[in-house]
Image 1 (cartoon, rainbow, N blue to C red):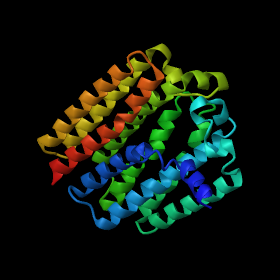
Image 2 (image 1 turned 90 degrees about the vertical axis):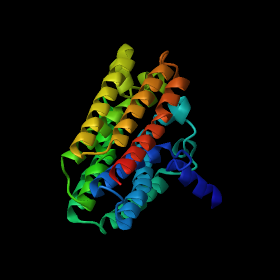
Image 3 (image 1 turned 30 degrees about the vertical axis):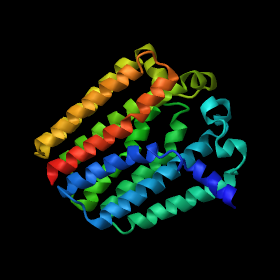
Length: 282
């Protein structure tokens, strides 16, 4: 039983919390901005647990869709569905359980949040399939993941221009960090026919990443103006500029190990922006 539970945890990537953090920080950005300060404990708890649950569900559905490909990629060949430590039927049951928990959480919120959540679930389910035909599946990932932002605004107040620009910035940010991630597997993905932004951008990968970095920063600066945040928020945005530059330096030679380090660096960017929001709205 212990080995099976550990296999389930690996399938949900609970041993790799960076994915949770990349979803959690923007969700908290939205909660604090929507409340213009500390959000209600109820909303904070539901969204925080929801992030863990739905990120885990996303990992399960991704591995179900990719189970015939993961064994061909060095980085993913030891995943539970590839090794057989979790069967497809067990994975489907786990996915249904996680989605049910997410539904129960959403039922404690209002109808608007429920509708946003339904759209997010649809995008999360189709995202793995888009890697077969859509040239930039990272955009679909961002569009689905960060619907947590309008959900948070709908739960705490209402969806407004601040939520819109925060969301657009987060989607662009997804393309940034998931392109670094995709650059790690680019050679394998080319062999097996998987699409990614790293393949789409080709030799201009770092240039396109820089363009999306600039868009994300522009959106976040505009959020500060719209929400009339204090200077500490803009200082945090400047800190994000520094981290984006550092990521470009890390990935200068496009070495897989360094690109992965650039991907991991984004968890700190999310934290810095969150601290800037907390200090600017209190």
